[in-house]
Image 1: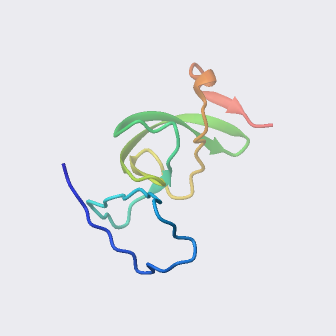
Image 2: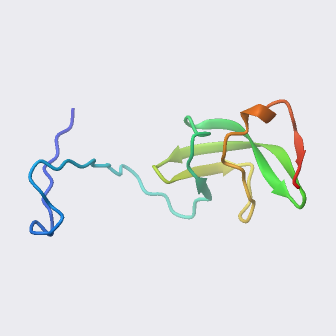
Length: 103
């Protein structure tokens, strides 16, 4: 168990009231020059994923290896290039498909 003592820079801010609670997120590492994509419900931990990537007028399923994450982003270890557009919404209903046409 880890305990933290947090002190506010603005302890007289007008929005503060007695009994308010907040979450504290601890950063344990920083990585530079990392390709990343938005975090969403598709991400369940490090490993290999099959994600749909935009290719002109279609979506192609691609194997992508994802690494560490925070609440906003997921590290891309391999399988994507800068500029690739990835579908991060729930595509489980298309699990058996490898290609989808965009209308």
